[in-house]
Every structure is written in structure tokens, then in C-alpha cells.
Length: 237
Figure 1 (cartoon, helix red, strand yellow):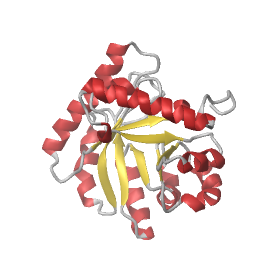
Figure 2 (figure 1 turned 45 degrees about the vertical axis):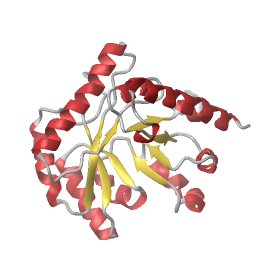
Figure 3 (figure 1 turned 90 degrees about the vertical axis):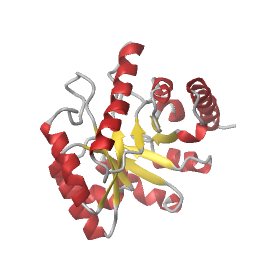
Figure 4 (figure 1 turned 90 degrees about the horizontal axis):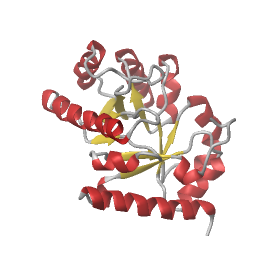
């Protein structure tokens, strides 16, 4: 058994346990393997073990792996989960199967234009900032920009709004982490009622250290890197 297989087995056991504790079927929670900083070979091995959804942080890094990943292109998807500058929107729309970090009207318009030129309907998640940390990206839930984006999205026909994404505060107590995840779920419910033309099915929240709490609070997608691929070296961070 490879180290990656052992990691996956342990992770699956933990996800199943979290789902049972939350009274939810395992099938309600999608696993995204966060492959940022890891080489293409690690992604190929993960795909051979059955993983089909991957997350990358940077356009340029994924572009450098894309050719090597061509053999699994038809059976896997890779989404951008890191902050995206609007001047890189065209390349992102070309490379990725989804952008899970949409955080402005301008970026949405750029992605829509680029996706239309590529003949794609690009899935997107709106990133919501529910942490006080200044380094965290995303839209403040009560901001005018958030309201404008949700009003604008139905008219951007080359984007397919799928839901929301957030990142909990680093190293926060369990109660604070759960509050963050719960806030995304309750926000989703409000926005879904107010914007019936948009799809809010996906709640992407929870990573290697807190996915069990996210599952308890309603996550439909968890983003796990370290628990699958191992610890990153200082250079990889």
C-alpha cells in the first residue's frame, strides 16, 4: 500500500465518522483534493486511486502541470480555489473546470467574457469572508459588492453559479470555527431565498484540520490537502 493510499483510507474513515455523527449520508459530502504545491505525479497517483476533483491556488502553477495531466483530463476536474486577479481571468477560464474564489463583480464579468469566448459555461463559487483576518480574501456578507454580484450573476450567462466558499480563521477555537461555518450556511439560506434564479447547492468549507466541524455544519464540499498528500515543506508553503 502506498503512503497516499494509506492517507486516503484514513481520511475516508474520518469523513465517514463525521458524516455519521452529523446524521448525514457520506454521499452528501464531496472531497476536493487540494494539490497546490505538489507535483503533477502526485495528482496522477491520486487520480489512479479514484480521486476526481482537485483544487489549485495559482493559475501559473497549474499551467505548468497541465500538459503532464492530460492523460486524466477526461476523468478529473480541477478548480481554482486561490485568489484570482481579474487580469488573469482569461487564462483561468481556459485552464480550469471551475473557479471557487469569485470575489468581485469585475472578476465575474471578466470570467464571463473569457468563458464565452472559449465556448464554456464556467462553474463558480462566491467566496465569502467570515474571518476577521486581513489576509483572508472574499466578500463581506453585508457588503454592497456582495449584493451587486448576486444581482449581476443571472445575467452572466457563461457562468454557472454553484454556491459559496469560505475559509475559517486559522487556529481558532472550535466554537469560533463552527460559528464561521454556520454563518455560511445561514447566509446561503437567506441568499437562496432572495435570489431564486441562482444555484446555491455547494457549500465549500472545511480543510484538513476542521472538515469534521464543517460537515457538522452542512458542508457539501471539503477541501483537503495535507491529510491526503502529506505536509508541505517550508518552501512549498
